[in-house]
Image 1 (tube, rainbow, N blue to C red):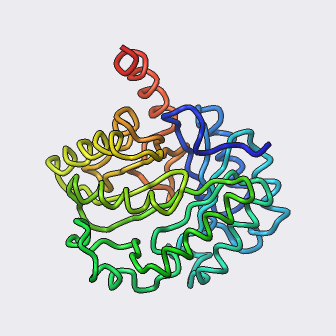
Image 2: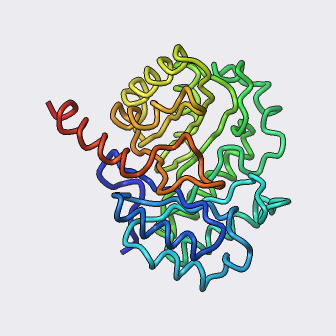
Image 3: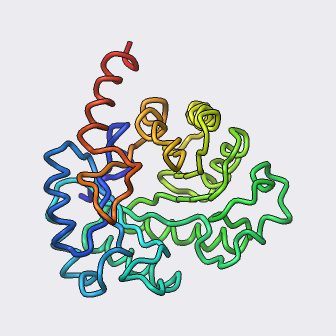
Length: 276
């Protein structure tokens, strides 16, 4: 039976794997398990091509009892410059599923190299913010739905993500999440910059509103230093998960909390606040 990433007890803590080799990621997994990680997400774009083989994937995914989500972003790294095309990256993710990954992260502009131009004919509220990583072309949406169905047919799960690159109001973020939900993912993930304490308040308000409006597990994150509090406290307010790190280094994001800290705070909040 395949491990579940999306449908475990919530909120859960996800250890981020951005190691530059399979062995480095295995070491991070081991440390992360001791620190309390409930799952991991593997950034394939940080691994050299020699470690993207079936043999390497099988060793990696069998090394932990925790579910692992496989993502392959276009983010440039020493091993992803230039990034492969949409189809090639997705096929690597499908191989990862065959080798033991619990699911994959698919971006909401998959297959669209000019997604912002797709927003012009829509009257959805978030369009005025001109967000990145969301396509509204009907033919692109259908292709994404087909990808999600292909993943589900393998017994795996999909996190549909959008790093929008602009601040959103609560109304805009909710409309975007509802649009993404229609495509059939198991988790909706949106990351929006957060450049002030006022915007942090808007992010936290949005999380509470999403908990009321969405029928799909979600994670809404305020990016940057000002948004750091949304990562742990967002998970207490409605986000299904919190991304965290085992160790800080040149490849891992400094704004993500340590696994042990996130786990401890969420356990305390759950005991003293949410369950009362």
